[in-house]
Image (cartoon, rainbow, N blue to C red; front, side):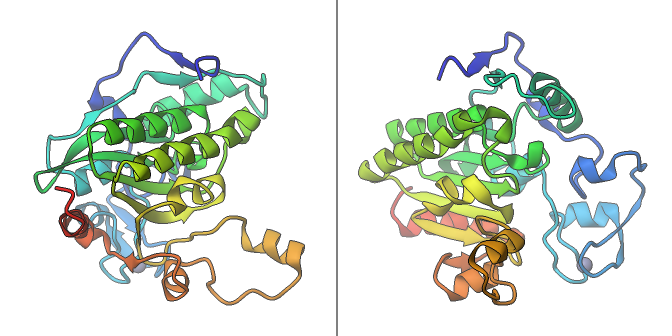
Length: 295
Ligand SMILES: [Zn+2]
């Protein structure tokens, strides 16, 4: 994959991962709006004290809506404090198609890096969950909708390969409304096969992969690694699916059941194993790792 992934020379420190402007919503939605002390819940409309929401893992204290959580805040909420060590941070995408929408793809990557503090839409590495070492990856929907291009695919593949070599339990938290990244065309689509093949080898080696689905998990991410967990958790009321409801309806021309792309519907139909609230995620991950004898 060396033709589509380049190594930048300057490694950034982990403190630079932190998304600017707090953790209440993806930075994109707050563009031009000064971040205040108060915010409103997108689900129930309640005015909430921002600090209280952040201390509650960005879960609405009134209606339990699980709001956007940045990759860095996710790491802090699941892994033991100070144990996360990032892998492959220096991978950056090149521009195989010479893609232009409103700006060139390299310019978009750069501006997304500045805006989110992320290098690309995934953060991978190792850390501890209640003193159990794991390989951990998380995609962030704030970076080009959390879409999977060559960097996301390559970092996840390397994460899975290291988990295989080191016999580590593997946890990937998915948050992607974008699926495969169109800016890289077929190179993005190839990542689905590459990551899935690495997961197959990990499985043959006896690994335990816990896939955690968050709002939203769609497209090529849902159609590859996110759906391949030995155990699949989802946060409450997360949007999970492949194509959007309007696209499906226009294609197959039948009325779709209410809420058919939510965690609750997918639990009832056997696609996911358990709905886990953010507050219990760390304990539940540790419990499954122990239950499967992978400590
Ligand atoms: Zn609410």
